[in-house]
Length: 341
Image (cartoon, rainbow, N blue to C red; front, side, top):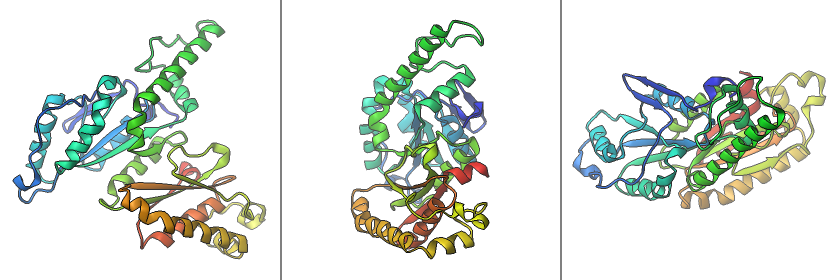
């Protein structure tokens, strides 16, 4: 996510299907949505709320949702939201995506109760929260020279200003990012989180499309491989470290291969400690999976890390996904390998 298309700061896009970009979404909306019984033959509206830290890629996510057939809306007047959803029920199963921006900070405390109220009224709502490390966000704002929505300082001109001025500007940007995290903390807690720190825009588009295609009303297990040297994914619910296991990297003929290749899989299956750890992780997840389902969790992200994110973690993610495929909906992500494709 290093190019300018990866940030959603100050981006506004429009076409005949709606308006896309950062949204100011005010949640204090009166009225009620007609129950599904009033619209025979039409399923409840499906709404995806896209939120996250500024610069994390919300605009890229909205592009992906529009490509997946969603009607993407930005800055819809709050008084029209319920009427808008009623109107959408008269259409042929059209799905809606709405962006939520931190500039609606005063309304954020009302957003969670509103989302629950709409769910109670029969609206299928999925909240996707995009996040990234502070270093990644600072880099993106520096590259685009855009102003953070909560920052009072203007970015300095290229090559201008003293070293102290640049340091103060960076500090002000970090303060704005941390304030934004505080304001969005409660929404993040109840959302499906995607860590975009290491993602290119193409990767993010694929991951977002995978999320909205996952089965509804069923817990989805996301198995994600990663390299510890590039940091632990921010969206992980559980993290397992497999660096203590034999490393195929040191076998010359296996070095250029990945954990998806048969020779690497055969090598790892022949290691007793690999099978032991795999069985223990599977048993742990199998034991607690019913509890997560009772808790009505939509997604559970299980991150498996090794040194380079190429062999062991990839093999574990692929194997665990196969083992759980009959028990839950599953998604596979390979953070480092996907970045190469």
